[in-house]
View 1 (cartoon, one colour):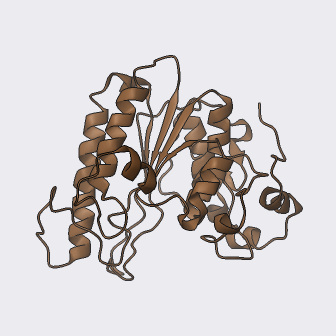
View 2 (tube, helix red, strand yellow):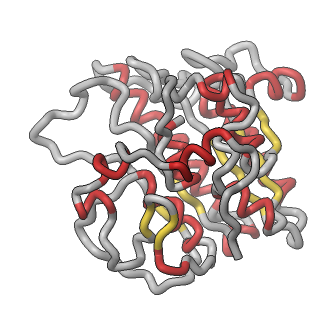
Length: 285
């Protein structure tokens, strides 16, 4: 959940209990904070969040409903409303290929109404286990490492989905964002002498601020929140929200300032409000 909170809210998940347990114990998940879903809801977006597992896991369902009151389509939803094949399960939950198939169906419906903007969030899972899951309906195993096969297979599935998106009428007005929350679920999978980072990419962004590529940069989850808003044509005044910096700005990120750990350890009354209250502390315009 820490990655999702960072991307969506620009703040850390800094709580006295395990991050994956918060939503199980509280009906509101960081209810005092304003996150991406809240902003899009206020702007009239229809939002759907697709999960390959049950929404109760890690409290993600509580987070989604707290921020944007999105429609949740999880394992329980698909089992009730879709004709799931007998081989629908990967190692845990619905295999990614099926999730993307249902995503296409949802997008075909969302794209029909050109007067209502939409946001579709998709969580993938095939590379999330220690050995990964290789979909036999989509891929063959060309490597000895099952985890390597799972990565290659997921890459193929996601690539096909993006290619399909680019052929749709709504694509010209749609920004696609692919983000990762782990480098690898298998410790030391990537050799230490290989420079490997988490893969993140903006496709067809509509930046409000002039794109300002600065390479290389040290960035964190938090920097994606203001940058995502910028990619949707939103003016991010001051280029900063929470712990995040709009990556189109020359402003240094917390990682570039080398103070991110120091900042995260600080006691904050505002963060206590984010955590325990059910109404946002700030307003936005």
